[in-house]
Length: 121
Image 1 (tube, helix red, strand yellow):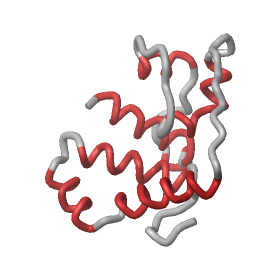
Image 2 (spheres, rainbow, N blue to C red):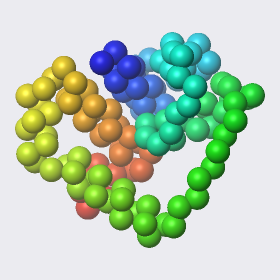
Image 3 (cartoon, rainbow, N blue to C red):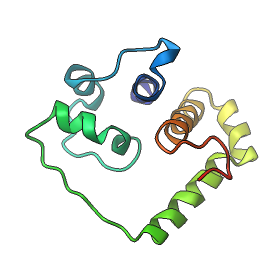
């Protein structure tokens, strides 16, 4: 649970520093957040790719290229799920985890993808 809250803080600092939240993450903060993980992938990690490469210059980076149409279909399904009213209600009932996860992914959608609606991109 604490890592989901910390990812929210990282996203907020990365994309919305004008809100006066935490300072942008560097090596110290990523070390605290990632702990003993040896591998990371997908969201929300991808939104920090340049910062993670800067923080861990000796890390191996594997770039996986996907067909854009296939990726967009997958992403669009996720986006529709995120804005599903039923899921929003369930997220608000589970403030301990689902709410935190939902608000973090909302920041990813707004900050990284520039969309805050189901119609978005």
